[in-house]
Structure formats: structure tokens, C-alpha cells
Length: 125
Image (cartoon, rainbow, N blue to C red; front, side, top):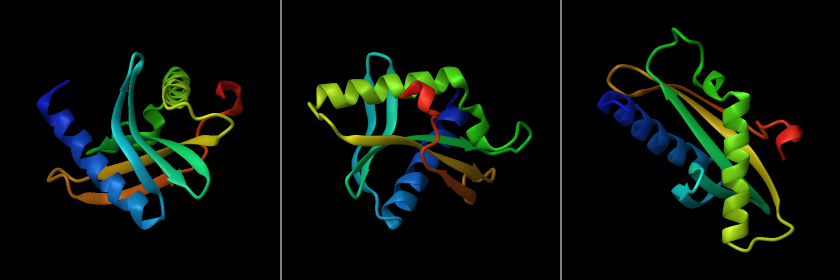
């Protein structure tokens, strides 16, 4: 991954963390590594575990950032979430996957942010 993309991703994740905290999410972990990849943010909202995928872009040429979460990516997110729940011995928990879509300008300042709750279709859960 190029330096520019890493900087965009890191800026987007910082903004997403702050945004979620303001909405009442309790952040448990960020950048949690699994054998299948990484969970950007693990949080809790009331009694629901929330696994958050953050997508950031500096251009809208390819549409909003959340469009990059393909069906394959959704499967990976669910696999990561199930790994986390098993590793932390969290049983019978309500959980979901949210996406935070962050548009930044070229100075990596926030232009817009969108939260998509329960973003993964039931087929993958």
C-alpha cells in the first residue's frame, strides 16, 4: 500500500473514532489483527458489539468510499468478527457490522462522513 493511501486510511480512522465516540459508541479496540486481516474498530453501543469497517477516500471519482466494501470484503469482515468473538470468549452476544464512509480533501481534512449501520447482509452472519 502506498504512503498516500496509508495516510488517507489513518486520517479516516482517526476521524471515524472521534465521530463514533460522539455518537455514544464505546471503543474497545482499533486495528485488531486476525489471521484473516484486520478489524478497523471494535466498539460497543449499548449492549451490541459493533465491528466497524472504515473506508476513506480523497476523490469521488469512484463513488463514495463505502462502495469499496464488496461481497467478498463483507465475508472477510464477518470472518474477522467471528474470530474476535471466539478469541475474547464472547458468547450469545448481539453484534453487527457498521461502515463509516469518510470523504477527505487533499489536505486530509474531513469533507463528509456517513455511518451505515448493520451494513452486512444477513447471508454473511
